[in-house]
Amino acid sequence: MTGLIIFLCLFLATVVIVQIGKVTELSAKINGEEKTQIKSNKANGRLWIIFGFFFFLLTSWSAFYFRNWMLGYGPHDSASLHGTALDNIFNVTLIITGIVFVLTHVLLFYFAWKYSGRPGRKVYFQAHDTKLEIIWTAIPAVVMTFLVMGGLDAWNEVMADVEPGEDYIEIEATGMQFAWMIRYPGPDGKIGSKYYTNISSSNPMGQDWTDVKNLDDFHPTEIVLPKGKKVRVRITSRDVLHNFDLPHFRVKMDAVPGIPTHFVFTPILTTEEYKAKLKETPEYQQPSDKNEPEGPKLWETFEYELACAELCGSGHYSMKRIVKIVEEDEYNAWLAKQQSYYESSIKGTADDPYNTDFSSMSKEMQEALVGMRKTEFDNKAAAAMAATAAEEKIIRLDYVNFVSGGSTLDDLSKYELGNVIDFMKKNPSVMLELAGHTDSQGELKSNMTLSQSRAEAVYNFLVAKGASSVNLRAVGYGPNRPVDTNDTAEGRKNNRRTELQILTAEVQ
Ligand SMILES: [Cu+2]
Image (tube, rainbow, N blue to C red; front, side):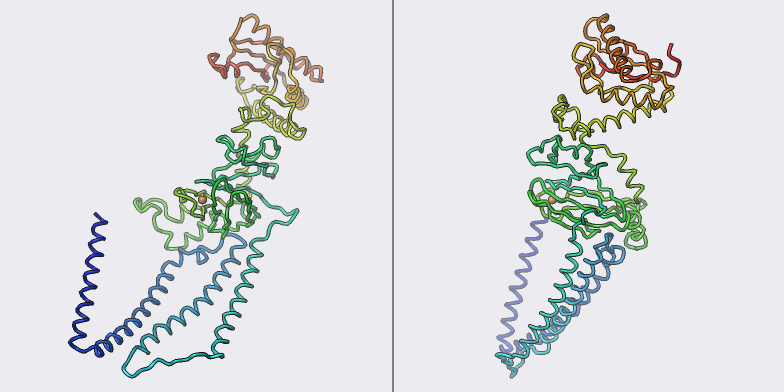
């Protein structure tokens, strides 16, 4: 329907124009060609002046009317340290070219009116004027030189990489159709290596799990950064060209498959501080959702955002990520809550190269894993110590394992049991029960014996390594205390376990 109406409008407009042409032709015949020509010249000259007037009026008015929405003005001053330099270059260029633009256009419209065709007026013919040539070559050349020099200066300042030994946060952004994937380095401050052939549905960035630096890297859904700290963003792409764009920080850099790029910037305004500036602006007092006039206002719902500034495909518009700038302590609290991608999604799965074989790991990797397991144990122990209910005073020894079917501890168990010894030395008065549990497969009697001998194996190991035997007892519970179903392989695996129960009463 709309298409038909547009077509009819265009058709009628064409008919009108053709008819006007015919009428003009006819009147020219009646009044004589020359008279009509003079009249038309005059009318056109006047129209130029009117058009020029409204053109300037509306351009200036719209610039003024929308000023508070534009980046680089009022509430939208740059939220990063380097952004001011870019805004200044932009403004200087705009002012200089703006003056030239206004002057040339005023003259253009004025001359069109002043020198419109008249009987007896002849065009002034000028073949060459050296002086003029020099003037209109030299002035733009000098102005351009200054603009380019200023631009290069700002470019060098904005594009400067971090110095060796400098304090900064490094994060990584990987573009893909159609999302930004963000990676933080984790507590070690180092982003792990990755390679495109490793990319799979469970490893979206292609991280190399044999690289220790990858073990603590995490993938947050939003970018959180502290105010006043230098940030270096590594920028890459998985498929096509994307562009890492943080408009409020004047950060913009292509994400190119195969060619890593980077950008360094320092946020200087927290999200809250930026909101406070918007709050002072009448434009941001409108409701954020027009259908909900009483709902939150525009300034209240403001968030910094990461966009893709490269037209990268049909879902391009959806490449948005929220960016939050917070105070340092809030940032640290957020960091502490993040779980590494390896821990949450890789560890113990088929993708974990060390799922079964610890011995093939590099020394560095082994140490990293042992360190992580120690932290895990210490956290569990602290929680069990703080708990009051008996069922919460249990530390599950996840890394104590036995050679299949028997009660011989495997090689790796010594690390976890080392943690237990450290714990006992730190808490010499705590009474502990070593509890062995099995699943319900097989005969009850043999399960009872197996769990008892496994608990004793752990007991003997601990005592041999210097743990106090007075504080310890070993009990085999067989299948009697399941924590999961015995109907599935996974449930049975969960039921086969060794636990450390912190006893509140004395050991009998
Ligand atoms: Cu994109």
